[in-house]
Length: 421
Ligand SMILES: *Cc1c(COP(=O)(O)O)cnc(C)c1O
Image (cartoon, rainbow, N blue to C red; front, top):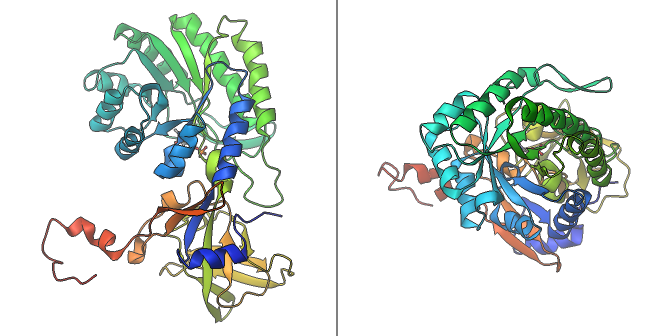
């Protein structure tokens, strides 16, 4: 059974200070998971996790991961600014962007971040703008479909990212001529994989590529970035990944491929987002309406603006009705938000205990790509974020949006000067 971060009594208590809806994160679980990851890769001397900021761009969360030894993976100017403000610098920062504007390369370069080029044409683009740094990374796209056994995991041939192999070989040589001395390789070819085989398989592909690149170009390869893609079990029937088994699987490939090729000092980097935070955040909401037409609807006090994945991908997020954990799931409901969009449903035809108005619902696994994907359609304002700290106290780590925030982009003009907030 999926556990909630807070109980019914705790939510009632929290509501005295911080009314629902809110995302709440579990500090102890975040730390424990980060430690297990670092332990699983401790066999590699240069190992480092660069947390993908886009998953959960909250400075309090980033601080926790920083304390656990993680760096950050950025892909935009604001993510770079956030990292800088928190004291991440130089090799604490991986800049894995695409379709990158000049000012973002300039900022990454100013911070001394690792720049991970997404395309061959960006070599000249970077050379002519921020300049080619001494250490540079290139993103690989193997094309075709990516299979594990008989399962098609993803479709890199249809993805906009990365260099082809020929471009990589050519690109490394070109970068060396332009002054680059040390190289990294990166690839992200399947998302939310719930199998211990993904990382070892990807590692095998990238390690062989590293050997080939070294032979063909003479480049000094310093790190291999396995990027994101380790998933989490959104549905209760799935087995979670075992990070120890994954780390061991990568180690085997390392010993098999890199060590004999004289590349035994290459550092392994990861850029995980979902795996680091997904299960450790939940969206807590309240039933405010019930509607009985052709189906039974439960209306809650949040909407897709706080969690877009169900509306955007039809993604499953488990739901617990607080205080009714032991009651039979004998009612079929659509759980809906308040947008004027029929896809604003956190669950469709979900079997749950009988829900009464005022009941609290916990939507699970919102810790990554949850709050951060939110938007303001229908003029809806995004919820607050709370942190359940290791000492059991609850801290506000982002306030909810206010109408003033929503109208702030008109502050250059006096057209709304008479607005009362
Ligand atoms: C989104 C992203 C990640 C993190 O992906 P997860 O699936 O959350 O692990 C890592 N690297 C890059 C370049 C990304 O775009």
